[in-house]
Length: 202
Image (tube, rainbow, N blue to C red; front, top):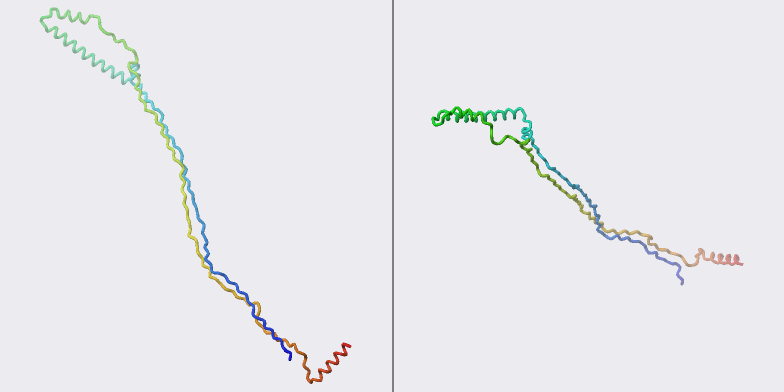
């Protein structure tokens, strides 16, 4: 007896996508700041200084009013002292009985011509007073200075868990197919169908 039914089983089809777990690290940027301090060269110069004082030199040639008064006072004082000494000497001569004609000797001494060194001199009698200070030169050089400021930020770690995705592409199914000959009720209809088929073929 031949099989009348053909049963076909269609299995279920599916797809799986698996994503592994991973650890990601994101680094941050680093900032670098540079500062520059400029140097330079400084120079300080103190030239020679001359101090010239000509007060005494000028007074020896043409004294000022104050200096003239002072010099005249000094000369008057010296003349008074000399006159006092001379008068004292002459008085001693007059009182000395051993000196005959003392008055005539005094007159003769006063009438004598001056002897000795004359007051010949060159002017000015003194030079200027000169003072000076030594020159001074100082230099200072400063190099440039560089400073760096580095800021490093910490990175971030991120954990991404794994995942599993499943998608069904075909659902399971069962196909039942009848492969036998047609059944007629009543059975006499089968003969009628066969004759009709033969007539058509003829």
